[in-house]
Length: 184
Image (tube, rainbow, N blue to C red):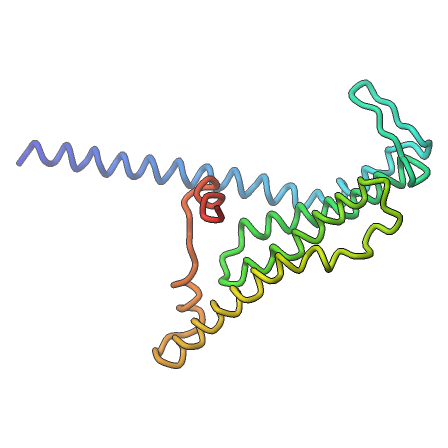
């Protein structure tokens, strides 16, 4: 009987240390995300540091304004697409609601717009993006509707609140890698 106590104490301490590490990691990741989100206005206005000339040369790279006329306008256009995309990606990976897959549609839209803004052969950047988003919308919208139908079917047959059903459908991975793996 004395042998079981040290083993059980060791297991309890191991779980407490593991929980503390997970909690500390979650606090650090959450703090970094919150800092990034709160700094997005400052990150957006970094385009003002880009010169208004056609070519911007630094010791790391050379940036050409291309058809935008100046490197600053090109940087402004990219920032208008990259910042919302980054915020949507953070929202997608941190959302715990049943409808979080619908965030994939604006993510795809902004991704398509970034590629269109970089491609200098396109005359009108945002002209035909809906046609390219249709395959994504054809998958996401019916799946969201089916999940919604399942929830409302459960509400009609079981005496559960909507919050209880959302909690039941929510998948709560332990770390970022599990969160990424659930989508593939």
